[in-house]
Amino acid sequence: MTETLSIVTRDHILRLIRSEYLEMPDLRLTCRQAQRLWELDEHTSAQLLDLLVEVKFLHRKDDGTYSRLTEGAVAAPPLNGSGNEWKRKKQDLIAIINNGASRNGDPVMPAWKDRLSDQDIEDIIAWFQALWPADVYDRWRRANAQPASPKG
Ligand code: HEM
Image (cartoon, rainbow, N blue to C red; front, side):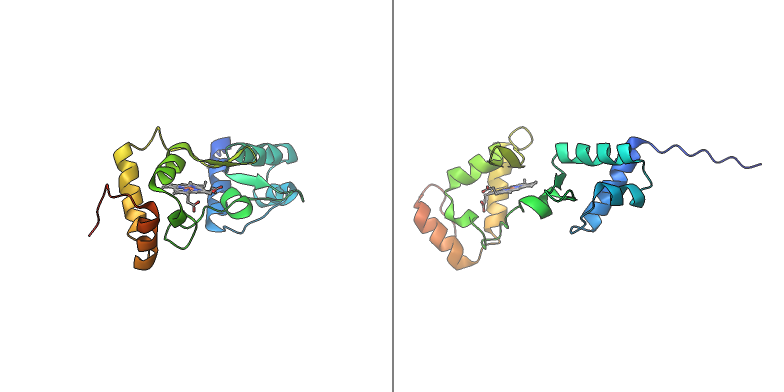
């Protein structure tokens, strides 16, 4: 006789939900649809989705659907010189990476100060600035007029 012991933990289901959302960035589900998709009872489905909202992975829209926070609510801007970042002074870039960003009191970008050193942040900025088109970088440098770190 074969016995199959199936222990499905909450963490396992959470990982499953996350990975589906990561694979399908446009995924948008009501609690009921999630319930059917992952074969959950109504209470568990609502509880897990709300937990993922709490940890800022999902966002619950007014129509009751759940989508990824970074896709559905506030998308992280590109850092390749085509967004807003080249308009910011170096100190502002450092401050955003250190402290994160909020909109209407809701955090939209996590703070990195406890995880990245000052040098890490310098390196990250140097890395994404290397992605900027030369004319964008030139404009940024002139606007900043900071002779501290000559380049090239
Ligand atoms: C080490 C990783 C990260 C770095 C270096 C970084 C860097 C930056 C920088 C320099 C800005 C300002 C640029 C601009 O406004 O165009 C910015 C803004 C932003 N980032 Fe990040 N970011 C990181 C991770 C994230 C993550 C994980 C998220 C989302 C969960 C995120 C979401 C945002 C949002 C929504 C803004 C716009 C904030 C606003 O102006 O209201 N970032 N980020």
